[in-house]
Image 1 (cartoon, rainbow, N blue to C red):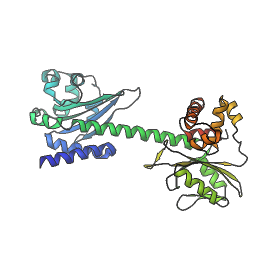
Image 2: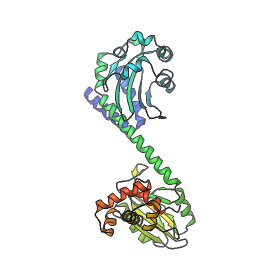
Image 3: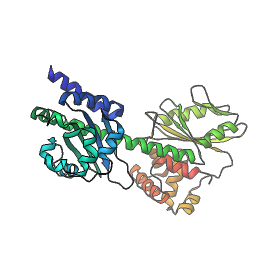
Image 4: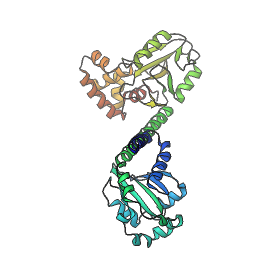
Length: 360
């Protein structure tokens, strides 16, 4: 029966990696298991200006901040703990002499007010400037944690480490996504990101303004981009792009004619609301400056071959189509694209096209 509960706890631990709201509940399960008064899971990012991250159970956050991130971060308990190997569970008594701890200002100021003395914890990992660990604490009167609790928690250490690492990677991806979307929203180029069904996932401020000013172009009730004139060509181009086949440039004639530059995002997809964006649409009123290979060469210092590849991408061609059009191998196109990225300060095709079609 215990084995089944262990398997369930391991599954729940790994679920915490993708849903941080589960940490408190899971920590409470381990608190009951080892007979602790509370628990803290924490990471420390050593990059300048980075803030510590922690999850807690059975403690007020004020208490945790006092104990771990307060006046005595440099204390005998922490110094001794950090000298222990990664992935090994240890008790207070094996980490620092109790007398040394009790005589410290850290104990008087941070532990004693909450009635705490005994701990059981582990250093989970130290990688890429990030340290992670967990600790379970209880009061002086309850005594040290048992050998059985020590051995029991040791089995779960790899799963704690894995869940924390997954959570950190997802948090970094969320930050990167938010930063990318914020940059798109500030762009002067009208930009729409589409999901696999061709529905608008993200519409930047410039695109919202253009749609409001263009009566013949709008998002329908399903958030699909529709045009009064040229809609069939637009839908065909969007369908090809979201399937990752190729891009296109579509002229949408009407009151306020607009060009739609549609490009598949391919392997460089940005997640919006949990789903990868499959294609990007750049809208520009007819009369916006047209992109020529010569103009790109002069503007960014591109070679003739690089500027021809860049101009082909702006016209909505994917890498295979650009290679066929220019009569070179796809590997050659990839090499040129990498050099264009470096010279333009961009990192992906959609970002490059946005820059090149910008009216700035």
